Image (cartoon, rainbow, N blue to C red; front, side):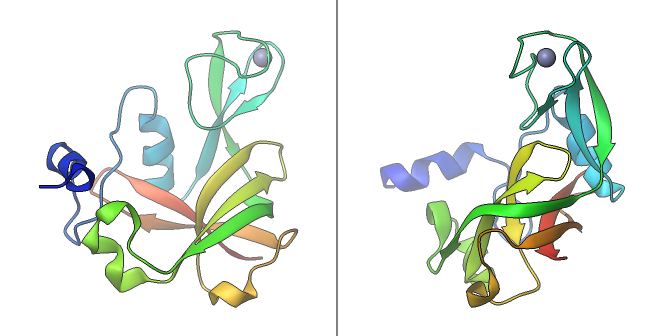
Length: 149
Ligand SMILES: [Zn+2]
């Protein structure tokens, strides 16, 4: 077993052989909301900054009071990349290739990453408007992705 393969043994995989996110008390609200077709991010109760990804403290002021708020799911592509080979040595991704991953500036201010779907790789441009869409990844979790707005 190579070093690249080793990490797969202690990760949960879905039926297609893709790695599953580790759902913790800190992140459960995010995955559950996505299952219910809602996009939520943490908002600081002190300064109002939106956090992504979920953390125990505000990325701007360090305050530990955070609440989950629903956002529109509308945003703009900050950057993106297209993978034409299997990522992280997980063969489960093979059927999805090519896979485009984007960094999205949400209209509300948080920056998040997600898969760009429903268009060919050559369609995507920095500055393009996108909107969230969701896929199920388990009985308890969904995952946000982004499609052309
Ligand atoms: Zn804050």
